Image (cartoon, rainbow, N blue to C red; front, side, top):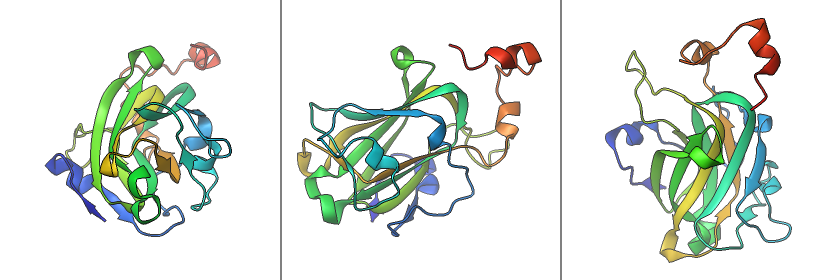
Length: 197
């Protein structure tokens, strides 16, 4: 796979794995903490296919563009990376070429945090959600959000529908991300109500 990142920082943060099975990564998979939904799907090819671990199944959109995947978390989470499995050799014009990642506290205030362009991807692509360097300039900050959305802005060869064969949301390696949270509330009283929005 060749990638055409939009910035120098992106080129160092895109990691490609040609294996069909999800790569073993240091970042914890927090996908199971959220409620998943998609903009549209063909029967039998819904959001469950994104997380079933089977590279031969896929989400198949079935509606107007842009297509999107939304993950809503019951509490604010730190998101470091996204791992997505795309296969141009199998999916041709159904393969996403440009992805946008949006994050926010709800569906009404989502903001773009990253845009990624890909050329004929085949395998798992892992990239940082944020483009903002951390204080030590040795990596990128996580994004804190209740809602994360991956939007397929364009497909290869101007395809209309899209196929995504796998998607994982990854948290920071250390829990220190919560120490960096500017709105961290650690009191016992707050902890009782932190999942209520």
